[in-house]
Structures are given as structure tokens and as C-alpha cells.
Image (tube, rainbow, N blue to C red; front, top):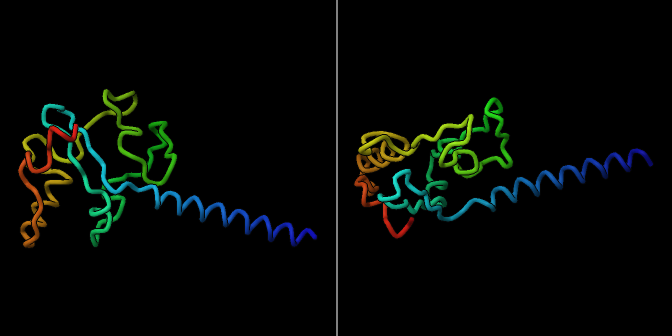
Length: 136
């Protein structure tokens, strides 16, 4: 009888863990609006589904692991940036622009877009091609 209970318990745990993993995968948004740190620039309508399916682009390119030393444990594997990075930042977090530095000369988004264009693929590289006031 004890063996049956142990087996049922293991199966129940495996089922719950599988359901949690599937729920996290299904929860990924198709499109996200990233609001600029400078609202006058307008938000960026970010096609999350398109970017997440690009070959060679793991989730960890944009989503870093929760930092326990910052006292913000992750609720799910890949949280939205704004779940921890708030405007204004709440200590001990700091708000930075991870997408590109001033004047879009380098950074996570612009570097990849420049590489894509060099490879013959069309990716926006001008401010107004991503930043749209209607997306605020």
C-alpha cells in the first residue's frame, strides 16, 4: 500500500511540474509594448513571438535569472522586465536602458538589428522605426 502511495505521489508531483512548465511557455506574450524611459519618444511595439522563435536566440538573451542578492526572487522562469525593473527604481534595483545606449549606437537591440541588416535581412535601425507615440 505504501508503494502505491509513493508512486501516486511521484506521479502527482510530475504532473504538477509539467503543468507549471507548460503554463509558463503558454504565458509568453505575442506582442509587448516596451515603454521608453523618455515617454516623448513613444513606446516600442515588440513582437515577442517573432524574436523568441529566431534561431540562436535563447530566452536568456533578454531575460536574466533572478538575482537573490537583490531580494527579488523570480515568480516564473521568464518574468517581464517591469516586474523588477520599475520606474522609478525601488531599492536595491537600478533602472537602466538595456536595449540601447543614448543615440542608439550600441546595445542589445541595435547591435542585433545591425547584424541582421549586414546579413541581408531587414531590421529597423532608425529611432522612429521602432519608437511610435501611439504605442505609449
